[in-house]
Length: 149
Image (cartoon, rainbow, N blue to C red; front, side, top):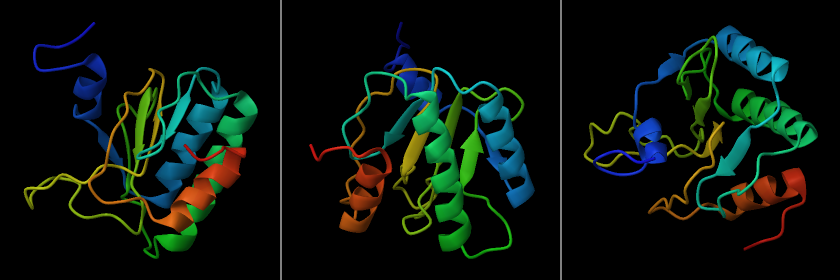
């Protein structure tokens, strides 16, 4: 199924999202995802797009590790860099990299892609014009023991 201007995935990616403003809201979002962990795709932008959902074990590991990374590297007293299509029943979550925030609203004329996506639908490959730093590649690949593409 596709939209007039492109795919359903692209429509969902650019559709409406609610910001996860506080760290408590992020904890609540992770709790909702943990309640129904099956069927989630986890995608690091710039890496090969997954063709199968993650295992429950890998999804829970990703949530723990991305939460740790965000709280450590986004040195603010608020979150504000995670967005969900629906906080109570999410099916699409965008996680922005604390070291590559740019302008997520696109006001600079260049829309910044998230660093990671969690979605209930198979993601399409996305290319960020900025190269993914080697440290992030190592972090991602080490998370699930993925091989380089």
